Length: 74
Image 1 (cartoon, helix red, strand yellow):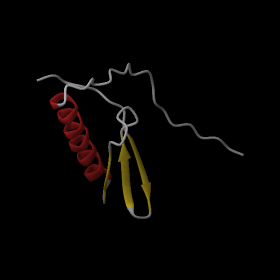
Image 2 (tube, helix red, strand yellow; image 1 turned 180 degrees about the horizontal axis):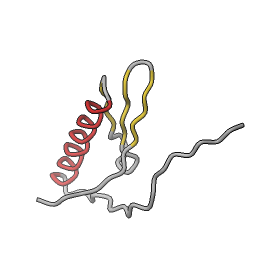
Image 3 (cartoon, rainbow, N blue to C red; image 1 turned 180 degrees about the vertical axis):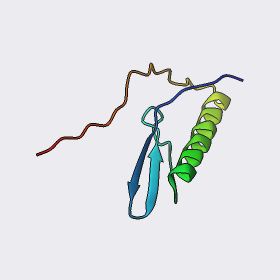
Image 4 (cartoon, one colour; image 1 turned 30 degrees about the vertical axis):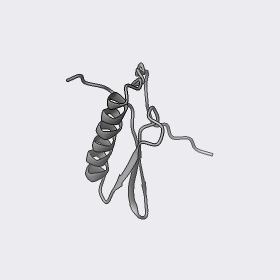
């Protein structure tokens, strides 16, 4: 078993939380809470990777650089 690291984005709107993995096209999920969205995106990534590996497709290897939030006043 190999460990993989991927960046994820979790956004909140009036309906709950939406999560996606920018490194894996089409890999997204949602949840009613942040914790649920986080657990669901982990499951989605795992299933996505299992499918790629089963089909002998390449798993993208990304080098993590940085992710941050900034506040800008206008």
